Length: 423
Image (cartoon, rainbow, N blue to C red):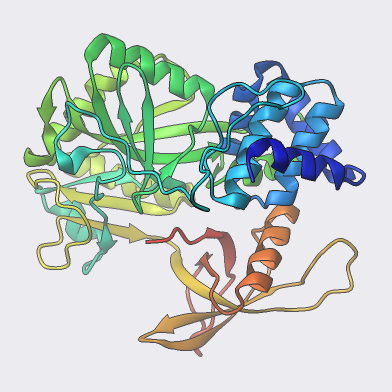
């Protein structure tokens, strides 16, 4: 099936556009004027709100855009739905209103597998989709050890998703920790990076992408931050996508992975000087001295933030987790665990698919019950949790944050943070 046949089949089978889609159109698309951006508006919407989105919802968004008179935006949603459902890559040509004369992009096979992109001027280990990130492990000592050890520098832990970006003069590549390629977080971020790459050449940054709510709280998805804004009485205020820069892996033609962490942090600070002074970019502050590290820990605790990351300032960039020399560790004020959903408890509340999430920890292949999680998720999160659990019961992993464990090993005030990223 080519994209023309796909769209026609969906149009012929279409039913009434759900009220929740109309609500998203009014509160998320019209308020931000995304509909005026054409296909780019659809891409932006999916980047902000499309994490884990299901095909039927994308189809309804396309139909809604058409019904409102925005065929170019609909085109972006149609392409996304087509790729998700068929596994084929949608054609890059613009679709006309009738969507005719579009060739089948994969006439001889049912699924297209794209090779990762190649940037000619980069070495193999710094190619988009091939960068193995350096990951912190749980600290074997308490934070006082790292505050007192001059070899370790500290940075505040951010509550988002790890993203390495490769910026070239004509395209920005965004890679997750698991080496999957992902969509641009915002048009504003993408354009600012392109401008710098055209001035300074190709560069690579390692950082964290999060969404800031009106209260300043950090969230892994735009939908989570938007829920906070709604609860604060500001439903039309949109979350801000923020890229928090930890370090640079390449800048001014130098491969910084073979250099020290100090050199990578210094290079990142220079890159930030060329980026516009907007909220979308943050250079994560680095505490180098005893006094700075002490203040970092005090500030993180007083603000009830997640914790700190400590890194040896003279270490090279080694991908993965190193539990031998501990070049990068994390200290946390809350316990954060990757847990398996075992059951969704029933509820009589209208519109809610469940009451709480029963979770367990996978310990050497055996599931150990950890209690329940009853907060931290929005209505949209609940729908996605229920969908994933129904499709793959006993296999869905979520990130849960708690204030510790009870005496019998159960979660103490567990809170849903997000879905686990595939490793």
